[in-house]
Amino acid sequence: MSAPVLETLDLVKRFGGLLATNSVSFTLERGARHALIGPNGAGKTTFVNQLTGVLKPSGGAIRLEGRDVTHSRPEARVRLGMSRTFQINQLFRTMTPLEMLLLVLGEREGRGLHLWSRLDARADLVREAAAIAERFRLDDVIGETIATLSYGKQRQLEIAAAFAARPKVLLLDEPAAGVPEAERQDLLNIVSELPAEVSVLLIEHDMDLVFRFATRITVLVNGTVIAEGEPAAIAADPTVRAAYLGGESGDA
Amino acid sequence: MTAGTPSAPLPASPLPPEIVPAAPPPAPLARDVAPAEQAVRRARRWKPAEFLFWTVALVAPLVLPRSMLLMNEIAILALFALSLDLILGYAGIVSLGHAAFLGVGAYAAGLFALNVNADPLAGLLVAMLTASALGFLSSFLVLRGTDLTRLMVTLGVALLVFEAANSWRSLTGGADGLQGIAMDPVLGLFDFDLKGRTAYLYSLAVLFLLFLAARRMMGSPFGLSLRAIRDNRLRASASGVGVNGRLVVVYTLAAAYAGAAGALLAQTTQFVSLDVLEFHRSADLMLVLIIGGTGWLYGGLIGAVLFELFQDAVAAATPQYWQFWVGLLLVVFVSGGREAVHKAGAALRRKIAGLKIAGLFGGRRP
Figure 1 (cartoon, chains in turn green, brown):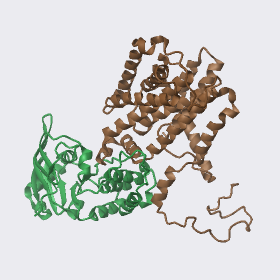
Figure 2: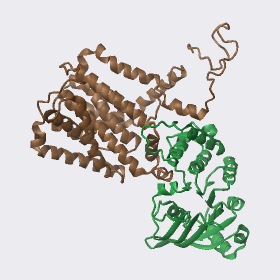
Figure 3: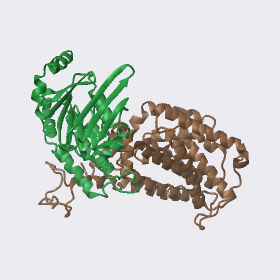
Figure 4: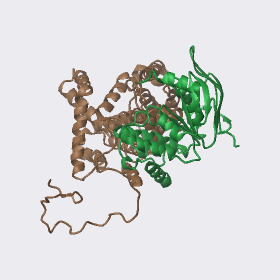
């Protein structure tokens, strides 16, 4: 068995008196289709924010490809092969999808401090951006201002931009959240068509998407991992049903 | 619909049938260029209105030979505003203390001319290097924080520089300033004259070259990463952008540009006083960018033209109260007039684009 591509060891995050991440040891296998589920407020996004470096853990360690990245800056982790999408769209609203993809590709190729280079100096990157736009069904809006795109297209761009960094680990934070039914199918197809060599961690509320996509599921409740296993086992697990459904029933 | 728009399908064409081409023309480009590559190329191409703008700037002295001193002031203010646009319009850093870099550039150029060498270009270079050194050092103060803290920090730095210049009389001449600066001819060829002809053409040339450089840099992967930081810092960092490093670079660069404006001011007026460090310089500059719009490089240039012309006209009409009118302009413009002006501009652009003459300047509008 090859080494896991991403793992955490006893990861802890405290906000004052609140224990948001309670000694989580988590492993993402290479090529995994892994889902992290849990009721609202379970600490899923807090966990992802620590993985990507937006939040500093209070304790424990994070390893990416065997390297300790616990204290690395977010952009350094991107270069080491981890990229993410956001639960709430975080896009460059005045750019076009083409520009946003070119930005990610340029950073990936270390061109960010090239002050005198033209954007299309690397024609291969422009072609790659166009190919990614096509793959994520954005080719019809590639030259439009991002702020004017439909919500579904913006969600697709969220994933496309994370994918453009050519990640080994892709963290999808509720990719389908709020997407209207008409655009939902496109998005689900995009998620299930991600290449097999990319290891994917899906943070999701939507059980339909989770069970359709994931081959492994981790359940987080109140910052603690209460169960982990294959979808069928998780679905049958009485503690998961009690904790998860109990927490969920209060939500909209 | 007077202009013939060949590609638009017109069901009831007013043109007589023999003028309409019998068959659709073949694809104009033989080479197979992907749409994405075309889009990138189109975005960086020079628009006709840009040629027009610089042509007008170049021939203006022939039309108005008696206004060259004013034109020189406009060119210098435009360069100064271009500098602020680099950090405000592209990187999203607000500043109320940009005069610090203008002033340091002006003093550096003045002192260099008085004590070392009176060559204008050498002085220009020294001023840019000096100002960029200050820019580099102070850039670390604006990396973090909100707009409000940045306003306060930049204002504070400018006040510190002002008081330093005021107190260090042996170097700066204090309230008397630096007097008796005599410049050598530009490139050893063009003497500075009383009418301001050399001054204007020199300032315009420097402005143009630095504009070209800025246009190139803001269209580079680096420029794109600045826009990314301005639009969404969280996403920029999640896309691999090292935010702090980029901000240090652009702040240093903008300081060098402001230093160049200061050098032009010192060299063409042959005088430097504490006025170059005054708060109103920074504040006026914000007004210039509010008038012209940020993030498309021409905003500072057009804003400088309008601001100087307005100030000149008002000062001529009511010398005692011109500040009242400038204040009124600011209030009216910010509270609605700006939208009206830019909407009219956008409508004009659409009209012209509809005639297939040009997309005009392109770029982002505030």
